[in-house]
Amino acid sequence: MRYADCRLRPMAEEDRALVLSWRNQDRIRANMYSDHIITVDEHDRWFDRSLADQSAVYRIFEYGDRPVGFVSFTEIDRVHGRAKWAFYLGETDTPRGSGAAMELLALDEAFGPVGIRKLSCEVFAFNGGVVRLHERFGFTREGLLAKARLKGGEFQDIVCMARLADDWPSDRAALMASIFKEDAA
Image 1 (tube, rainbow, N blue to C red):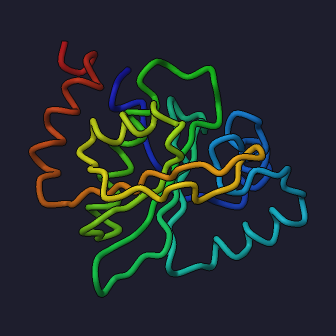
Image 2: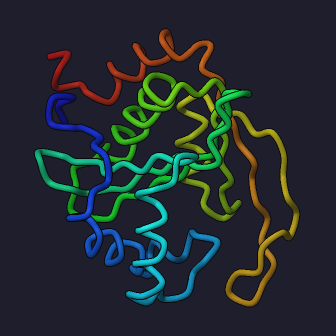
């Protein structure tokens, strides 16, 4: 995987149908708080609000000029420099390491242009792969919301995680070398 083949761009009108198709995939809904099939009308209302929302930033992750993932920064608090974030790969036929590449670009965006000092997220405890990925990127566990969300008929634990911008430049260098090995060769 090459860094030059990866980018985040603003979500735009032409992404409307694609984002809905991604969001309604079983494998994505399984890890979201809201896991029902989203109707076109419901999605259109969310999408229209999202494009106008000044307290949020929505991005599409592209690999080789092909949209393959979604990143959101929400509840942006510019006074305190905080935000929440979420992401997912919408496509399954992406190169190994695409999720890590998307996370690196997302942190660049959050700690750069978006101007966040502290980035937080909540992950279902059963989604251990994402918890470990975030830990690899310097997120720490700040808490556990025990049995906080009903999912599949059972209450599930939520892992609360956060990462500060402070050490991002030095952490980024090591992550770049491990994710984009082709660039280092």
